[in-house]
Image (cartoon, rainbow, N blue to C red):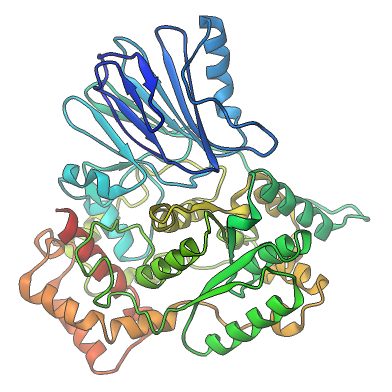
Length: 521
């Protein structure tokens, strides 16, 4: 949402030049991300200054970006109300002789990373901007990712670079302090009234989430994979605004591919979309090929989309055809997720406990894997981590992401629904069935995933990268986070054609972490 450099105990008189806010002595600078779905405001009482970059809300005029001078009482009122903004936002506060403060909103639409030197605090949505501050690997965070046990926290893979989590405040006065918020409160399933119309409530919640922002149909596209989540949101938009929204998707591989194509074609025939459908074949554009930014050595965060190349190509295709916003189905899984009590299941990461290439130091660090993590958020932590993977690619292309399933109203509806509406995504299935779509769409049990694409990558494009890694070495080896001998054995197993998804798919994380480490350190 922004990039900035803040220097405390210096000039705090801010001005707007049409591109950025700067202080009189130019020791501090704040550049809002330029996009028609964002706006920024600045308020000062002559001493303290409040700088807010936020998503626009429909039905309101675009705010004047020039600093407005108000009374101290009016400033205090504005400060107390800023967190009530219904969309995402980042708030920056400066005052003479005080540390600077940066507070994020609850949505996590775009990540915010921070780093500092002795004098200033630096922040950006793109981790590449902070690469000079990466000092080494954070063993605990690397270990979490190696075994697919991600945790939402202020830690990142790199020492010296931190994540400002949702509703978190970063204080900097020469030393950085990150303060987590109070836990967000959540509800549980409720008993439905006899006349409850769940699908109508679901439609209203989707409408509210989509209507919150002033989306322009001419410049808005929908990620419509053919799955239940993105399909539910996209079909509702087409139902309300016939012929106005375009679509796009990545084609998967394996047995689910034919089903994906067939389901998408039925949805596109049944609902009045704009007629422009952008498809990128993830099999023909495999990640980790020569054209992949990671392979070329570019500064790509380890948190960015694992299927990076095809996702980048799809994004470029959408941008080339005028898209400035993309609506996704991310968060749909978590909206209707079943609890451990309702459906006992393994926690994420348990299946990776026997991964042989995970090094000694990583196993030691995993004893503390749940330490220092963020408290419960408004948005599910797994959803927040998913949003973080998609945003940088979209933002580089000038596209702002919109995630209706991460809207608080949608989340609350999901929490209140009884078990039988959430089990196997009955909510989404019944909504699609109400549109007249066939059981091929509404009852499909084909797995829609990139598992087969990952298999192709690991058994083809990744093999020379592993050979190079094993020959030239890696920071992952030097820090004993990955065992090179056991990794070599696992890679040989890939070459022998003995691919097993559960055992070998996590190797993609190994190579992505290695490439990120090589680029940043």
